[in-house]
Length: 105
Image (tube, rainbow, N blue to C red; front, side, top):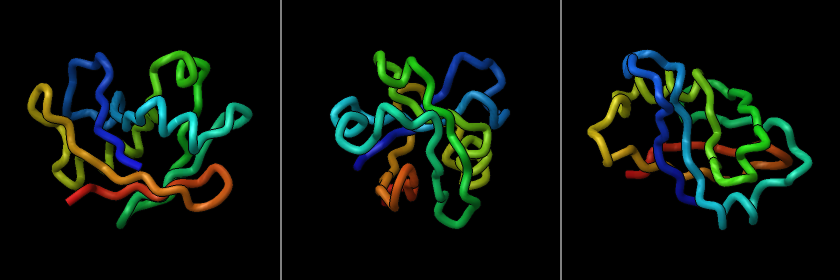
């Protein structure tokens, strides 16, 4: 499934906090279970990290937020990005509550 970079309201764009990925509501509904409170994300070339699923994930803010995802994006020079042009990613299911994330080429 396709995903894009997400950045929260933090003013410090060089900090890993406040970054994550945004997933379409259609993909969220098709690939995520409402009973999950966390998922594991295997970052291509990086670690496997835990991302919390908050109640807002199901209300309309379908982002997986993690300072570890942010650090990975910064390390790959994918963040920060120009306004309106977030990086694009592929998010692939890899087992129960586990996904693989890689930049789209």
